[in-house]
Length: 345
Image (tube, rainbow, N blue to C red; front, side, top):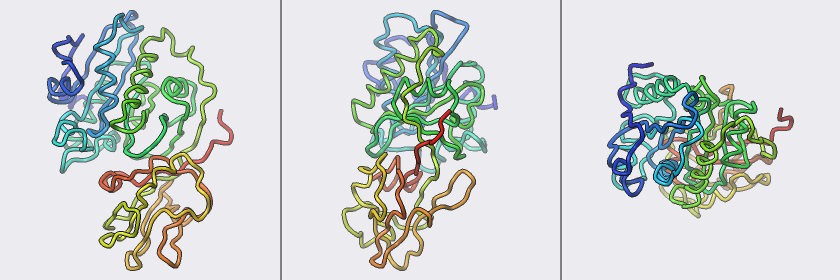
């Protein structure tokens, strides 16, 4: 795993000149993936923040830049910031590319293989985490659709719930295995934070306030974790491979599957049974797949296509991360389906 460690440029105590006046300038100065390190009052401990695993999700990097520029006192413990997909973020038009053309999604590479550019960078990030020996890892993202802030983690333990409470009021417990950082960072509690929509100043505010709380606390074990709305991630919904996908307010003539243009208004809302989610052309066949943590396709339990070609919800369930960006929907997924956790520990 250490083979890729040199891919991350290390900068200790970044100066104002290295940071630049804004976060875009910081990315230009970095020129590529980097880890920025700041000494804390307690040098025996470290907390680590990862940002910009996706180039079109810049709020975390903007929040890190603001924290670094505005800090007046050392953090409680050593702080490290990994800023990953700098080249994708700066590719014109800036902050619109999830990944570089022809590469794999970085946040799907952390379980391997590590034999291409994205895999090597994932290995370098994991090596940096292992070397830092942090007491926690927070990975900050944006959504492309309308969503409130929320956190995701692979466990229901108190350390993850405390981290989540620093950033949001909602926590998603996920057992899906898709190669994300939070699945692979095994040496410390790790959560993903979705701080809101990219380009929204409040998303930067959510990330910045959470980072400030994270790094100001002398003891994160003292952070209360009560009051979180906890949901369980059930399935990941994707358009079937090869389908022509569009987002529109009506059936699109050049698409096999058209998703409604305002579908993201349903995020974190319990859908009524039979809600229309889009339109399917008759010759397209079954349009979606929806795999749960066991790999079982649950799509026919969640959807049906009526006689007029409407894709409808079968029963009542809660979607999150619904996107109205067809490029992101093809690269990643349409959305996830969750349910409230009935017996959180």
